[in-house]
Image (cartoon, rainbow, N blue to C red; front, side, top):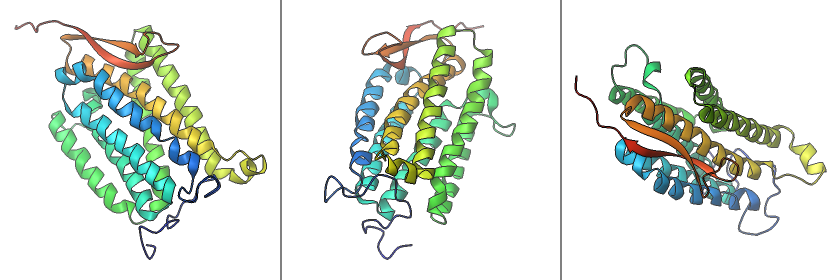
Length: 266
């Protein structure tokens, strides 16, 4: 651990963008300011998903609150490149993923020893606590591990899409996967080929990653919210809408509950 976890540039990771180029107070200017997309997306999705959250669980709002905090901690991290900023950034991502798993992970894929969603949520909480403790052992590995978790999410997504006959949902999944591939390519390229990008004076791929991964999360969470609604609240009729215009070409997707059918008692 560095002498002071608050010290600037005490983080083990320094991204490709040149430090203090545009401001004496901000280490990585573009990597910092692009986090504004999280400040916009989080509250917006809380507003758009409120009808769904009322039907399903208000914990949905907690996901987007933590998503906004991810942007805040990421901005602090890239502004200071401090060890504390790095840990806040990575641990906030870990916990928002854990919460998303607890709420939206499809019930048919629960392990056999898990009997209900409360048990599943408790298991995820324990795993997240252990992962948090291990994160302090080798912080530089955290980011790679967090990105690897997405492969499990992709695996579940593929299994669900194979069962889905709604073409709109299949198209949404395709766009989400393409966005993720482009986003992770930017992240890896910034880490692995920084010298090349600096030779052509374009060291901003990590800031592009911020924007792309934010949009990817909007698409992927809408997909899993849709699958969740089908499994958990089948009496509702969920539909994917787009904001600000209900068009796949110019809007961001969200789950809308358009009609609620009363449950039939057998």
